[in-house]
Image 1 (spheres, rainbow, N blue to C red):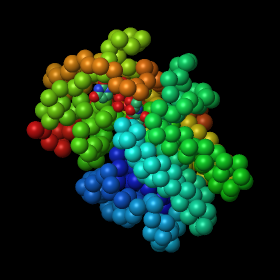
Image 2: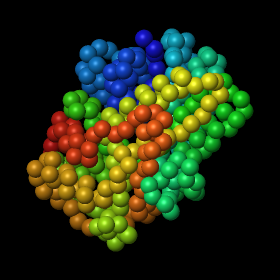
Image 3: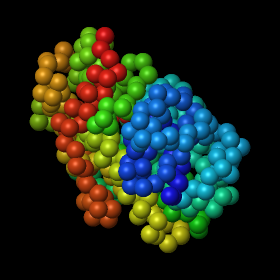
Image 4: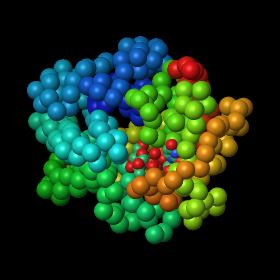
Length: 338
Ligand code: UD1
């Protein structure tokens, strides 16, 4: 069985990708420093997979520890999730973000080269597009100045990968630009585990629905969108996970020295109010919310053009927004109410 290293594999997207890899006959090996994840996620993962998934408590900045994991395992590929991702925190602590997110990629690429591992899928974000003029947004749309140090680390890491391939490196690389990941594994064994007050919409909604938060504030309703609230492309995390498996399989077929990138979204945009209404429908209860001020740095509307990933990887989103919110709600119910 081909072994695939997943950095940040105990995190939200990483853990779901481990399940998708197992479902496709691969053996995931996780490294995670548990700075923003819990050991209970690995237990949930083991339960879903019906066996123990190998997991090392290792920080990606610890080069010798990373090398030891490569010595222990013969990897066929790597999926690199490990990174800090809180936009607000990144504006307060930019150096923390630049050093962690960039150095971890560099150490990983150098270690892969040392051990002859060629294939890597990198987690990027639609944040690199800023507010696109034309929607849906294509991969060929020029990137814009990053709104935050977090967003800039994604741009810089993409640039590093492009330069690395330009230099003639023996690697094969795909960057995936995620839109808004939501949902949870349908079993309810794993899902998103935000630390403290969630920044993202869906965990805030489910925590409010569960009575853990008093009310949701909708950040602005005077945008130029169908109901005035912002539009995003919400993608089920299991669909996103599957895109990583397809990306790896695509890389395995390429010649050495290869780079490509894909949007990963559903191709549909939904407003914040639509997400709230859909949540109310699947949970069978009203959500306490109010309209508040705009959030600084928010993009008005963005959703993905998925033609490239549909055609080249043969991947498309299978889950609806309703499925996603039902799975998020199930997961919240499992985590507990107030
Ligand atoms: C945010 C980041 C993005 C990052 C992604 C990671 C910003 C500007 N963007 O995306 O760079 O890649 O998280 O997951 O922070 N909303 C509310 N009330 C809330 C929370 C959110 O109305 O309490 C609205 C927002 O205004 C937005 C939508 O819900 O329109 C989604 O917000 P969020 O989940 O934070 O994701 P993004 O802002 O799209």
